[in-house]
Image (tube, rainbow, N blue to C red; front, side, top):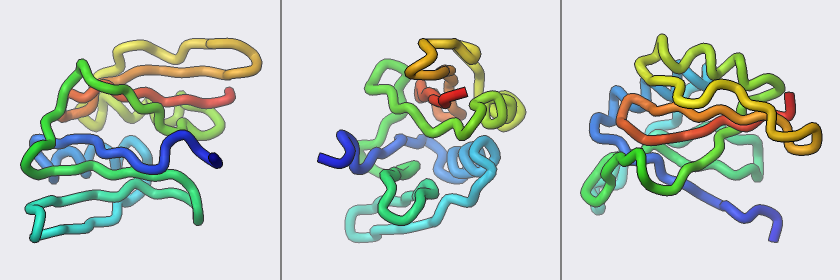
Length: 124
């Protein structure tokens, strides 16, 4: 097994607001995708060829929550960079950059504009 995760959905109550938030925080453009058959809108997060990615998802059955599974997004070389954009994009930092260990690196937790609890991970 190359990765323990191969896809994830980040639920959104307001699709446009959520996509704008992640575009700003990640300094990247999410790729829009719609599945009218399922009534689903998705903004696919960027990834390198063959890398693991997921999406912001809006549709029936997608309900944001601060209590569900937490995913860790790649914070790049220094998660202070995307973390510094969280609040200006409308989110809230819950746990600032925290050193886990020299081997594991750092993490930080934030709440997105939809109310989801999400984290960043970085080696530095």
